[in-house]
Image (cartoon, rainbow, N blue to C red; front, side):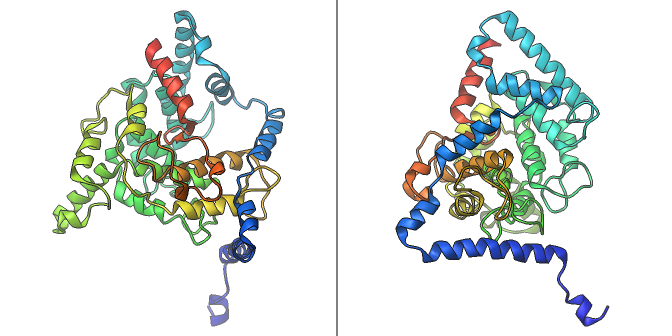
Amino acid sequence: MDEMTSSSPTVSQRDQWMVESQVFQIYQLFATIPPNAQSLMLELQRDKHIEFLTKGLRHLVDHGFVTGSFTRLLCWENPSTMNSKTTLSSFSTAARIQMVVLLGDQARMNVEGEIDVRACYTAISVASVLNILDEELTQNVGDYILSCQTYEGGIAGEPGSEAHGGYTFCGLAAMILIGEVNRLDLPRLVEWTVFRQGKECGFQGRTNKLVDGCYSFWQGGAVALLQRLYSIINKQMAEVSNISGIPEEKVCLHGTSSDAASHLWHEGMSESCSADFKNIGYNFINDWRAKDPLFHSIALQQYILLCAQEQDGGLRDKPGKRRDHYHTCYCLSGLSLCQYSWSKHPDSPPLPKAVLGPYSNLLEPIHPLYNVVLERYREAHEFFVGAS
């Protein structure tokens, strides 16, 4: 291979340079305009996003028996209307049958569909909210997800594939919900995830791939989960240090005290993997959390508001792409995670310095395990736990 051929940029390099150029042009424009104009650029166009999404709802149709049915049941059905034991029993039975179909058929997304980690998370998270999660449904799920963690530290969709942000979130969240998260190599998972935030300020989904607004949640959500697992991470790092001879205090993540670590370890995340699945999701959101987020939350907000947001409503993958409902959902979810990433308690309103732009940009907090507005999750948890 001659010198000219070896120095020619690859397609991936050209694409990366183009995206960087588009993003940095936006940042350069922002830096040179007056402060009042900067405030306008940083404002979340809430009403226009609502209009864009509401208009889109009129055109949505059901796709697939599992997706369609659970969308209606979980998103649109008011739990308070299910006020009879017969209704609840029928509802739970139908849901359980679908969970067994999903998990019993090697984690399939739907009938004759893909087999991957998404199906594990879909089934486990729905079963968790409905309070029907048990040992039968979780059998072998942890083994499958563990087999999908790659040498990089992230989680792939299936064994032998490449680590990917969406699958990493799904695998990590599912392992937390079944009480087996301590089986993953969490230090490597942290390293892989945090290094997916690039110079554009947003997250990429895979190594050497382009930034994408949807990973504001998939990667940002994984980081938010890891932020509550410091005790287990530190325990794994201490075990490595004992082998390598590194003093334990040298390997602890910043901001984690031994008392706090012990508290979190014994609150539903113990090595014994307690089979009490009922309150794992509920306790997880209220557990002690680390003082500092593991990613640059202000930088990510900057990418979402300046590069992913369209002023006419809707959010997108990156500059040059069209807005769509998928990216609108996950960009807004990621924005909420950023805003509350410094809060010590999920119900504590964040300080103004944690919210980029006007404080009116503040969104509702979400439950990071389910990507559901926290208050809606609590209502569902209270209903399904109380009705069981």
